[in-house]
Image (cartoon, rainbow over all chains, first blue to last red; front, side, top):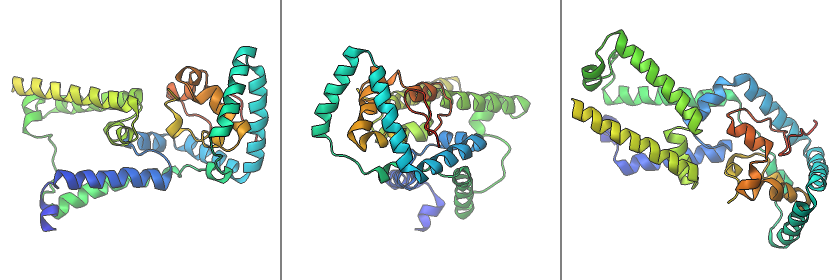
Amino acid sequence: MASLMTGYWPWWLGAIALAVVAVGYFYSLGIPCGVSGVFGRVANWREEVQARDTEMAMARNAGQVQAQMMAEAMAALEALPEEERKQVEAELRAAHDEEAAVAPSAATAVRPHPAAQLAFLASIAIGGLLAALSSGHWALMTDMGATYTAFFGNGPSAWLILFVGGLCVGVGTQMAGGCTLGHGITGNSSLQIGSFAATAAFFATAVIASFIFQALL
Amino acid sequence: MACSHIPTCPLFKHFQSNATLRSWKLMYCDSDKRSRNCERYKRSDAGELVPPNMLPNGKSIML
């Protein structure tokens, strides 16, 4: 047990811990686990609270919601071009025989309050701090280590590059719809094709960049 | 191929609750081509927040 607190965990134990977090997050909160997504929901605090209030109202008025959805469904079906409407109606008749209905009560999930998301982000930092303190490796550092210093120095330029790098990460995760946790663990484990592509792209980029930096050292 | 947003779409569960609501699923979710007509898909794909009460045709459920 003591070795778990003083060094790196075995890879398999780390993998199990991450899987427990990702699966537990999904089943307890009903949304996929991803740090950039959580950060985005905290940043959009007001909109998230409004959306949560709407979801709570939908859950309270489930019968009314279902009735409106059914009326709109029939109107939308009627509005389709005739050929497409006939095709959908035929598929509907076929699906009616094959698919089992799901109870309406299962359809009224309400997203967590953004405060819960903020607690998740805070717990990542607190967990890291506790791990560093318990291992005896905690120290206040103002540099990014020897390799980073060798390339970018230790002055304002190093901070500027970190800032630009952070911006790229933020823009990139927004464009890709997720980060290493969201795509690499949650997306891949739920067999999302987009996550396979995203994970392949950012790992390949990291490997290539790593080789380039090693060659330049 | 079905819509890639199904795992995160809060309305999709509703679309399986009875035969009439299943028509939403057939009109918008069951194929990649049809899902591109979904207003929820378009907004989400553009990185915008999607109102929980917005239907695939862009109309809102009144509460």
